Amino acid sequence: MSDGEAQEGQDLSYRDTPRIPTREGVELYYESHGEGTAITCLNNFFLTSPFWREYTGELAQNYRVVTYDLCNHGASTHLEEEPSWAEHAEDVIGLLDALQIESTYLIGTSASTQLARDVALAYPDRVKGLILAGPVMGLRGMRRHRQLNRSWLLTLETHGLATLYNQIYPEVISGEMNEEGGTPGFLGLREAFTAMNTPEELAGGLRLAQQGDTSPELLSRVQAPSLIVLGDDDILLSPARGHDVAALFPKGRCEIMPNAGHVPFLDDPDGFQAIVRKFVEEVEADA
Image 1 (spheres, rainbow, N blue to C red):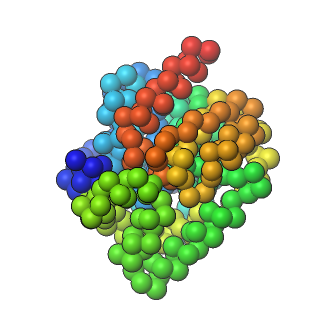
Image 2: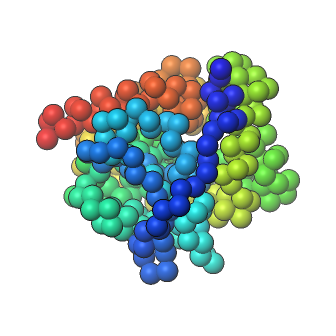
């Protein structure tokens, strides 16, 4: 069974758990699985907390895996205005405080790799390490990513959610996964995509993704050990550029996942979790 077919039956239901207050007027839905060193997953604007269950099960056998919905997305508080990146970073810290997590590893994916970077810069004592899957960073900035986001936003606003999915799928899914999954894989992921998203939530996220400081120089200020996990079929970065971007971090390196796209854990959940586990073990051993 392909990953896309598995997603067709994926449990995306929410648990009846208390929300966590962070900023004034904001409460976040979260899930916590496992015990030990904390790993916190940061959603991009296309994912919700329940989606991570399929991709963190092995990690939860050895670590405490925390997932949550961003403010204005999923089951968390919806405000009239989309939060800023700084407010999203503040929410991360509020969540950690409420869960009594002194420091954590952060997994960011696509747009949320910018959030991971910002949390590490603003709250360095709270971040043990960064895992940046399909980062939206470049040697000279993030222009290509913002161009993609603008085109996705235009499609969403003019043609709706289904057409947006049709556009995004071949851009972010690897060629290998596309061929292997075929029509069932395409339809399975579409079911999850439409279950997790509303046009309003996506529009707010896509607009925010076009904001924030894109300077590569910021990466040189990140003191936490940083791992870029890059599919060799990523739409934004080639493997060579992935290693170049990783070199901008004082403690950075890059791991290439073969036959994987912009969201590499979709292509190989077990391989991705093994990479994360090895990274955490190495950082913990050097601490």
